[in-house]
Amino acid sequence: MINYYKILGVTATSSQAEIKKAYKVLAIQYHPDKNNGSKASEEQFKKISEAYIVLSDTAKRNAYDYSKKQYKQENRKTTSDEESALVTFLLLFRKIKNRVLNANGHIDEAALFKVINDLLSNKNIDLLIDEDIVAKSLMIDDILVCCIFINNTLKLELHPKLLKLANGDPKLVERISILTTKKEEPANEEPDEDDDLDEAPSIIFMILFIMIVIAILFMVL
Image (tube, rainbow, N blue to C red; front, side, top):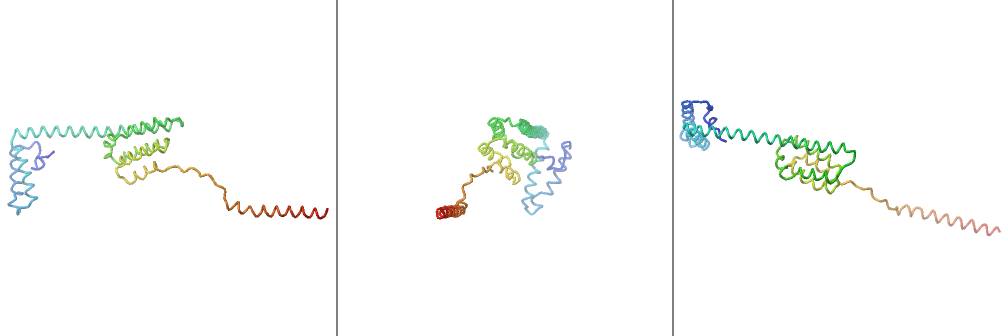
């Protein structure tokens, strides 16, 4: 909301005479004719004139003061609500993480995924996306710990939601990328053909040696 008092350099407790005096000084200072037709001066002169029109009239000034007061109260309430929401989500994700870590391995994977997925709704992410980066980092870290206990398919469903929450922060994006890293299963070892080929000559020589020994025995007999 435009602060007419600030534009004229006065306060909300200034008298009508003080407002009029301030207006005259500023009007002369920023009048276009005094500033070679400067666009910036012309814009400022318009703001000064608008402020004086409102504040010089008692009825208009009272209406403006009331509107300004209401605006401050609503803005304060909005800020308070946003801070309250941030704290709520931080506590929720921390509570979920602690429960998971204290479950001694007895975790309902589907239920855990559903809770996290529901909390990461588009509406909630839109509410949190512009919050303090430190707070978001704490939330994302708690979620990633919980994701250790769900399968790769479910992790991939949460991945785009966390990316949206990260809002392009490179460090958060890098941490979240762990959800797309699959664990490699040990491959079945196949017989080495080269080893088989190496063993083949030895077997042949052994057979030949046995045949020679048998032949000698027959000759002796």
